[in-house]
Amino acid sequence: MAETENTAQTPDWKDRVLEAALSHVPFDGWSETTLKAAIADSGVSAGLARALFPRGGIDLAVAYHLRGDARMRAALAVADLGAMRFRDRIAHAVRLRLEAVEDRELVRRGTTLFTLPQHAAEGAKLIWSTADAIWVALGDTTRDLNWYSKRATLSAVYGSTVLYWLGDDSPGHQATWEFLDRRIGDVMQIEKAKAALRENPLGKALLAGPAKLMEKWRVPTVPDDLPGRVMDRFR
Image 1 (spheres, rainbow, N blue to C red):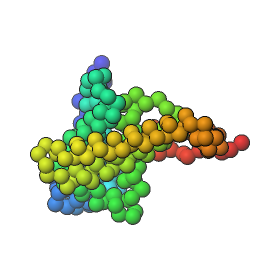
Image 2: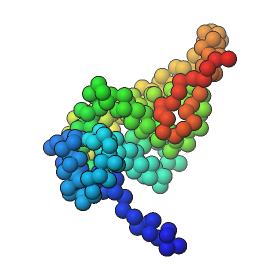
Image 3: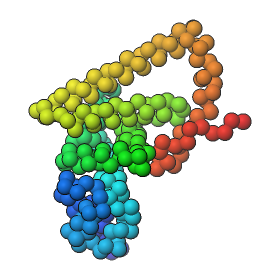
Image 4: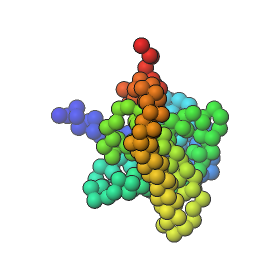
């Protein structure tokens, strides 16, 4: 029991450094300068902080994004989603994710960082992880190609909404929520068109070959292996 209590009281050193960094990011970005300032402000030893964030500012930015995903998941876990249409559940999840941000400048600085060629792949992976977290929280159980298509589509919706939100000065970000609703509406129209094509005899014939090929696609089995491997070897 004593050991359990001690573990519960152990400080989260990573979160402490990250929290100390936030006030510096608007001025110095997610950078080495910010990490140095965070180390000084947090009281965490430089050796431990650099072990927690070995790549410096980029690891701080990644940790901040993942913390936002965790807060969104926690909010979704207690949200009353039962009375909502499914499209409204998705919109609500994206809204919760954006409302988890303390200061838009933190995201603006992160967006700038992840558009750099050397970090673009990691930025895309983070957006994918957010889309995956939303689908999992909403109870998605698909294990075929739809697993990929759902996350790819939501990644595009989320990414475009973030960019719109960064420049939105409307009261309560109302323009952003309307933009988000339009994007989800566009996706719903595409899904309806796909369903109609699958039900059409000619459409079934056209899709027969690709559908057989896509049966080989598999989703990742390791949680952090996102977006996963495209497909197994053909046999």
